[in-house]
Length: 142
Image (cartoon, rainbow, N blue to C red):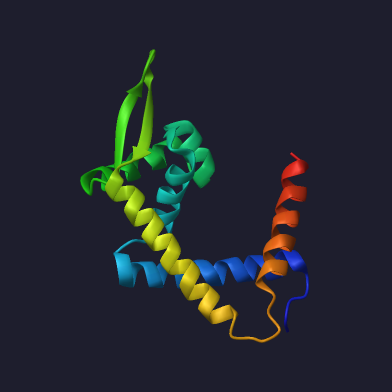
């Protein structure tokens, strides 16, 4: 049976897109979707502390601390103490990390749009606007 409830439909769509994104990113960039999201958050925030990064990723601070070494080893991120607060460690993308985040993001966008725009009936702008409205309505409830 096909699920008609929008919350389940959107969840199924996101799960499928994330799974496909993971496969595409592993094949092209040697990067998991989870690692890509980590980079995207840093790309958007420029610099962020572990607490805020954990919240944005939906994981614990300990999980972020365990994962950050992988990014440091590949020169994708840098960490440094916040001026005036030695206990607060900030993380930001390196030039290599910025390039990878942008390249991987552009690649995924092109691949997904190439797939979903094959339909003559697909209205990308309408979908983008409606999803943005839904997100804003849900965020406003906080």
